[in-house]
Image: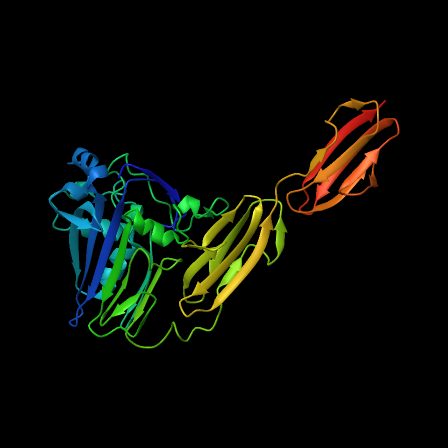
Length: 384
């Protein structure tokens, strides 16, 4: 699938700015009744695109060493080359520390490896999770972007995926940019991106913001939460007990902005979905630069919803009727137009009709047109 994909990204992948081909990751955690636990990770690379690159990376990437079990899988009609490895831990504290601390993660990968020298911060730039609570009946974890916990030096063909705290530009987000989809998760799944996480407890899961099947909670490409926070518990109800709406910060409802704005969406428990102008995305850090109206809706895992509508307008008004710096020998009719709303028009400091006016007398004229956002256009002409 030798194709350059460019779209807004979501949780865990969050912004895919320049991804060549298809790839993915599966991570499965298991908590055993005796207190021991394990973390099984599988990296997937679409065969047609990455086979040559993978061969070239032999002896330089940990994935191509004997530490990982290599196989092929066909998923939804696509063939992937997969690399799998399982790490075991004496207790949950050890696993939590390893999966959230880069140095601890690298050291764990080195254990029992015949290629320990390949595990460095050059090949692995982040632990799988940036935060994790793993205490008794509670699992809450914030996943990092996939490229960070993968080997970064696999090949130059793989563009790095964005961090999940990067601000994603939403100005150009349309169904067309997502190949007709109004859901970025569905789009990613359609092009072969695989992001699967799961955790299995000794007892049944009572609540999760993922899919529950007995003692296992799982999250896939099309069910990942917008803020990358994975939640599963075997006691209590932290999700259904939540009555607070998500907070959308950085802009005001019905606000008008001349400069690009940055928006941050947070929730006391979990931001499950974010919708921008009718399109479901998966990032909680947004940037709006393009002149247009935006409506953002955010929902948490219990269905509490908040929304804002605002506009960015950085386009100057247009003055027609004569060009700047020109001279005229007869009356000049000026027309004023703005992409949103005109606020005022002055000629030599005096206010005139903001839609249309005619200047008849000889002289020098300075015209200033200002829109509601503060964008200003200046035009100077003479009638002789």
